[in-house]
Length: 274
Image (spheres, rainbow, N blue to C red):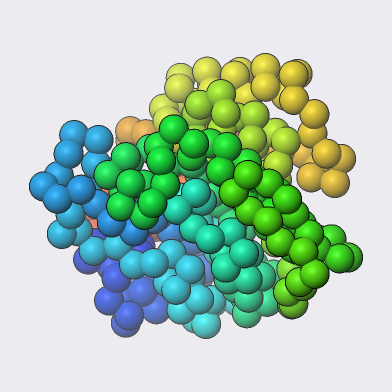
């Protein structure tokens, strides 16, 4: 099973020199991937639903990954996840295609529908339609990336007689979330699913994902759905094996949130997969 990292575009690790140092270290240690988090704005004062204080620094995930791409050559780069309904899908499609090219095909676009109402409202997106927007935006971006003559007509997006190059050739899409809509979306529109949870929670979510696969058509070109999980709680070798036995393809740890110096955390956790 592969191991990835997440969260270095937040908190004390956002310094450019520290980012370059950590990216080089993560690649050298043998981690497969480097994922970013996203919140464009946070409620101030902090609400119960908010994952962080409003003063916590969070770099834009795509800008951060473009910087990381310049210091690495084999590390896979992913957004875990971009809150899709907050983004203009055509602009995001261009950014994703550009980052895919600049990273030589190492970029994975991870998306989610979001959940933080103050953030969505500030960006002009009603909480109630975030799921339908996410579905439509994914379809619109796919049309722009893959259609010989791109066009799309939906409730939120309409375009025709336009084109955009470069076209991405290896860009993967991953959908995050545990709701029925997110699981259905992963099956029908994504190369992978991004979840968070303990072994028990992951087992339950994978069972629900399997149920979604029974009722949702999956396009053949997407291939087998890859399973990416950010584990909750402490990890040891036995716990890693339990995730692997469930069929998880990659565990994604969050070193800035774990106890101990970041370098030691990275070395200790990659050793669990040896």
